[in-house]
Image 1 (cartoon, helix red, strand yellow):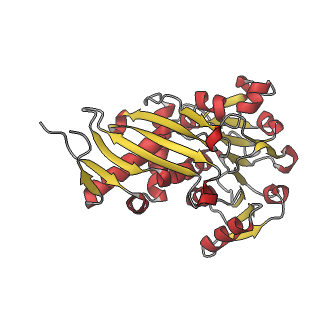
Image 2 (cartoon, helix red, strand yellow):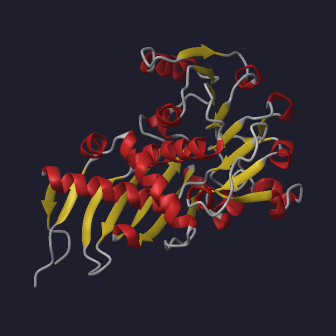
Image 3 (cartoon, helix red, strand yellow):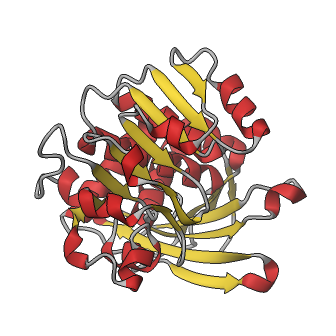
Length: 330
């Protein structure tokens, strides 16, 4: 029997097929599956190329409930914007777990953007106070856009307090969301942006704490998104010590999440970490206990989020006849 053809989907097709509403639903489901131990996902593998100014990451996963397996090959090159390229570029191969045939090859740069935003939205849904109305965004790059898109779907956000040292990023955000219904407040400092916020999302590449404990009020929820490699850190350790901290995956978070630096230095112990977001979503662990709790979600990005999103994209593409079928193997 000849092998089936492989569906190719470019950025334009993926962007049209994957909405934030869909991303939120499938990422929440993937968190629950992962929290119940019903997925297979090795920790992401890093190929560091410091002499080239970046790194590559291989992220495989299998989700039985979706009958989906695949791998994302993603790069992070901080200097790419100066070349007119995105700092994150990704390609994903979705395979049939029964036969191993490649079902699809698709752009995953947009999937990465959307599933990371969706993860922040899921964290806000389960860990922030339901009456949260003020969102602080530390960093106004493209990831802040997807974080806002997701969080405003799960919480009644009426104001966004925004900080970024780059005026162009601030202006792009303001232009994009001028008619969002939320007041956009540009703040001169991180401290001013955080004070008075119910939810704080950090999306910076910082390697030293930029958010201080005195700025964070009781009851605040923090999505720590930026730390995704060894040595990266955005939050002062005192915040983590005072908060209920939830990670997305223990192996990845301990290696390269927000907790990686304080764990390696001994200023934070594994016992200081409350548990995983997946366990909370699955209902096997309690998230926020009191309105006064400070909660932190340490996001490193999971392959199961990518594969779940890719499966949704593939299914919709097939249903709508989108993309190009090509012979890749055989």
